[in-house]
Length: 167
Image (cartoon, rainbow, N blue to C red; front, side, top):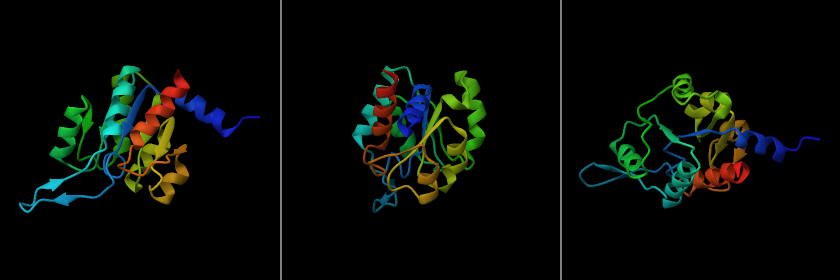
């Protein structure tokens, strides 16, 4: 008998690259504006450690976001994430290029997303995850629903899960 945990383990073992959305995953989806109209976002340091743990296990992290924000570039630079794709409306269109660049198959890709613009890429990868406050269709299609909400350590939770099955 194949249990859900065995399927999850098999999918996690195959992961060689993690792709994440930003708003609703690395943040809670909220945006703050300064009195000068400058947009601000809050990120969770646990996700930063998740990126480091994945990197230490030779699993690169890639950002794909619809937002065209310098804040995302600043956060990625701090986390030493080199592969950052901002202003992307059809995220699934980048998947073949990512697979070619990293010499992997779609089955080797994990994707973390929370909203409708993540659906198509989420359905194409080997392992998919959603924060517990992601929209219903995303949670329904995900292999794993995090205990964490967006902005509260989702990437770290997924990193810990993948690493625990790979070690």
